[in-house]
Image 1: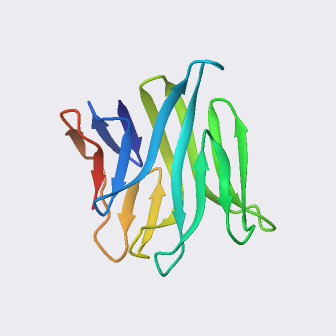
Image 2: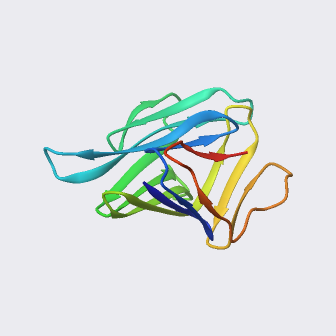
Length: 142
């Protein structure tokens, strides 16, 4: 798969994105509905699991704070009550995914942010304009 994350391009990746070495988001083609779906985990500032996404739907929403909005080809995770977009995924094709907006936490509780111009993890320097060949491995963001 190919991933556009901010202004960065990750080519020839497996179907998943790792953040700080742990699988965080993955993508699958649902043959029954002929559409791409999102799987993933949502963590809080302490690295505790607070939500789980399966087939672009919330399978676990511990405090009821999240809501999924899906209008193919876009899937969004929003904060209930404020409508703040926490993750926006656009499926460009069966093997090309675009993420230009995210405000999540890693399994270590570090903030993970994506804008159209970059992605950033915690206080580390932002990543912008990278073009990487993943050689069939997960796109690894760390």
